Amino acid sequence: TITRSVSESVLEAISGFANGVDLTFTAILTDIADNTTTGTISGTTIAVDQSRPTIAIASSTSGVTSGDTSNDASISLTFTTGESTTNFIKDDITVSGGTLSALSGSGTSYSATLTPSGDATYTVDVATDTFTDAAGNGNTAATQFSWTYDSTDPSAFTTGAVTSVGGTVVADYWNITNTSLNVSVPIANDSALTDGTVQLRVKGDSGSFGNL
Image 1 (cartoon, rainbow, N blue to C red):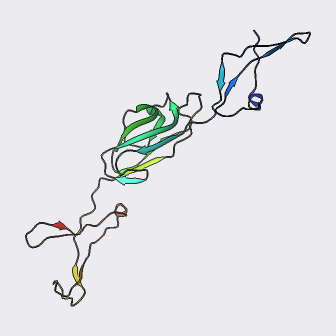
Image 2: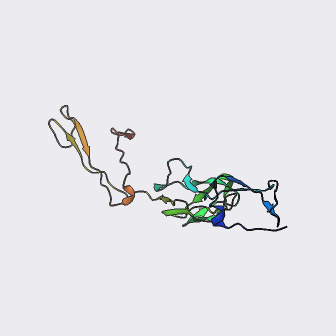
């Protein structure tokens, strides 16, 4: 038996070489008198797979996507690979803080739960070459997932002045000519209130408050 090596440059230069192709091999023996015999096809084929598997990180928790802020006590994370893998494990995942549960799943779909340790922004990463596909190609890095946990209520405040608008305006009265009310609500210099909401409520005498 003679073993002949084929270099990367020679193999990848052959006609028909491409990602996804199965390579089949045979050989021709030539004796000293130039007589030749072509061997039967080898029982071994080589599958060409030079594609790195991708991985995407997302959250299946309602209303939570990367970059969001919420007060969820924990969020469910999903890890989806572009190709099936058998060696993607929890240690392949880097989190900036909090607690990551055990990783479950198989093939191309995995999940884990991230529990925050306090108000902060948490990032989740999977670096390049942490797991492989069936061909042994290392993965590309995931796009970083980030989530901000905010469990702190806005600062206490006192609702400000209420003034009638339109027609004949008389302080502290709503009359037949008025068309609307302006209610002053003080807003603290708190970045967490950006993109928040203001819900006005009102009650009559000793009744219950209702939303406007």
